[in-house]
Every structure is written in structure tokens, then in C-alpha cells.
View 1 (cartoon, rainbow, N blue to C red):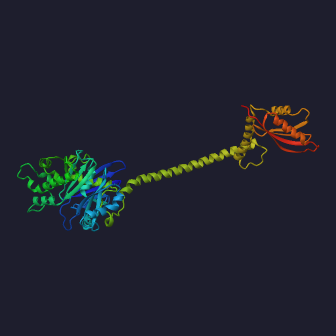
View 2: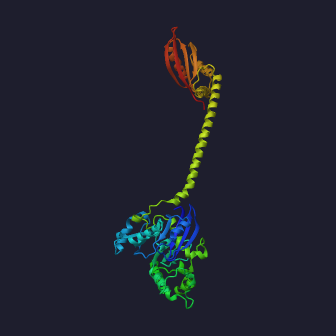
Length: 499
């Protein structure tokens, strides 16, 4: 999907937006936006709608996610990797391994290719969950083209995370925690949870209203400080350890490194605390376009923007079926509008220049034809009417060329005089013969017309020419009576070729 695209991350207290522009060859980060969400009361303003209006953000070219725990998450292997084939069979496979009827749920998959074929990472939600998410966005005046599952969308950050694989990326949101496992080929496994982070928030604000102005970077963990939140973080830590153990059993390999992102990753000492408790290399994610400070906070929205703008067959999008996106692709129209206008101008310019050239050339041709007509009339004054001077000239030139070809054909061969001498020497001395015409039909064929005393003498002439050995063939074309009682004849001879 070319043009501007929004990755939308909505937390408990903030709205974070990553606006990118995808071109034919590259992706450019245009802007990151943060706005306070806060508690909404009747009559309050709408921060989400106001943010999109204030920054003129596209209201359809958006990728968002469902910040809830899915009903089920399954992995199904296939011996092939064509998404069209998988579309036809994966629901049957899901039905075989599930305790529920997939037709009663809403599901989709993200395709992971491997050497044996592929694996479909199938995510299942209740239809009501998807309906509520779509409706909630529509209430704010936006209609996301892509609604997906956060851990899978984080797979779009494959090129930015460490090359020490398998790697676990943990996005610590304040509504959900997303776990994305990467191997050398990219995203491999995924899961999410809302329960542990909800327990953390409940314990953090126990007996008091949530502080929407709270900055998680002001908290510390693992420092031995009385204000440390290790006790509150215990449910999350337990879940992380179980997830790591589960993933390592799945891929039959130890996770070598962990990267963290999200608002809770800003808690002071978080990386060191996890490094000590997990006994693994842990660091905050770093995305060059976002920089060190923004990378943990905007990693999710940036991943959603990348995932949504590069959407293709085999990617997960819940905007299908009854929730299918039906909006107009305004950003794509903008991308191709300028090239389209330029192309139209170019076509009109080419038409204009071609037409102009045509009429200029036609004028030149008319002038040349008039000159040719004048030359033809002066060359052939006997021709009274010449309707097509060029055709007439071509005909006359062709006649001349034919005569020249005949002359060129006899050059180096016998001339009519030579042939006449050969014919005379071939005939009996007592034979009276008058040759009226000797004509070269081409370079080797000659016609002889003449008069002799009788039919018998014609036969003698034919026999004498044949026995002379000078000619390849001798053919009597016709004989007849002359006016004076003699016999006229026509004989064709073909000269033998000289090597």
C-alpha cells in the first residue's frame, strides 16, 4: 500500500501514532505523534478524533490491533506455502484441533514459511470482540484498513532486532503484553496476555484512582529501594519465564537474547532486572529512524504501520467478511495522481507534436510531389496527362532497368554478331537463308526469325544448330508460308554457359 500510512497504538493514558510514507522502493518515517488520552466523561472532547484532525492524518489507511487476549492461538503446519491453498484448508485443520466450531468465531492467520512448507499462526477472537473494536474506532471518525494481532505485527521489526537468534521481543504495554519470537527467518511464534499487566496496574494503584499523569520512567525496579515495584511486577515476571520455557520447547532451542519495548520498559533498571532474573542478554529495542529515546515507546505503532502498509496474502487482517473494509484508498490515489497527471500531459504533448510534425511533413511532401511532376513533364514531354507522376516515373525507370539488366547479362558473353557468325558457320554452305531478326530474350536465350526455301530446309537448320554444340537447347517455335512462296520460321536457342 503506497503513500502515507498510520500505525495506531492506544494505551491506557496515551495515543501514539507513527506516520510513515511507503514508496516504490523505500519507507520513510514522516512523524511520531503522542497525545494524552485520559479518562473520558460526558461532554469531554475526543482526543483521538482531534489528533487525526489536527495532524491531517489519513482516516482509513491505518493499522491498529485488538488489545485483548485471543480466544485461541494455534499453529498448523502445511507441506506447501501458497496462501490461496491454505485459505481453502486451514479452517478445516483448525476445526480438527479445536474444541469449538471455528464458524462461531472470527479468525485469521499469519503465514510463516520454512524449508518443509509453512506454518499458519492462527489467531481466534470472538466475533463480538472484533465488532466492538471496529465500532469503537468508527465512533471516533476513523476506519482502520488493517486490524491485526500485536505480536504478529511486531514481526515487521525483524530487521531492527538483534541477529542473536532465537530472540524474544517483549512489548510491555499498559493494557497488554505481547511476546514475539524470532528465528533466522523472522517471526516464528507469538502470544499475548492482559491478565498479568492488569494485576500489575491494580497493585500499583491499589486503593487509589489510576494516575493518568504517571510516568513509568519515574518508577524503579531491582534497586533495593523501598519504592521498588518488584512485588507488583511478580505476576509479569512469572508469565515471562513461563513464556520463555514454552517457546524454547516449541522451537527446541534456547532463546539467546531478549529485547523489550513499551511504556513499562521505561521503568528504571528494567533491563538489568530482567537480565539478572532471566539469565539472558536483555536490552531495549533500538530503531534508527526513531532514535534511542523514542524506540521503546513507538516500537508498536511503528511496527503496525510497517505491517499494515506492506500487507499481502499470508498476513493477518480481521477486516474481512462481515467486517471487511469498504473505504476508498485515498492515499493510493494521491500517490498515483501526480504521475497520472504528468502522464496525461506527456501524452497530450506527444499528440500535439506528432500532429504538428504530420502537417509539416505533409506540406513538404506536397511541395516535393509538385517538383517531381514538373521534372517528369519536362523529361517526358510526349506524355500529355500524368495523373501520378511518381508512379509514372517508377514505371519508366523499371523499363530502363530491365533493358540495363539485359545489357549487363550479355556483357562478357557472345554478342548478336558473334551468335550470327556461329549460326552461319553451323549451317550447310549450299543452304540459302535470310535472317530477319535475332533477339536476346535474356542473357542466355535468343530468338531467331528468318526465311528459307522450304519446311525441309527449316528442319535442316534446326538439326545443324543442334549438332553445332554451341547451344544448350534448340527449339523450333513456329513455321509458316511466306508471301513469296518461301517458308518463314522462328527458332529459340539457349546458349551454353561458359565457366
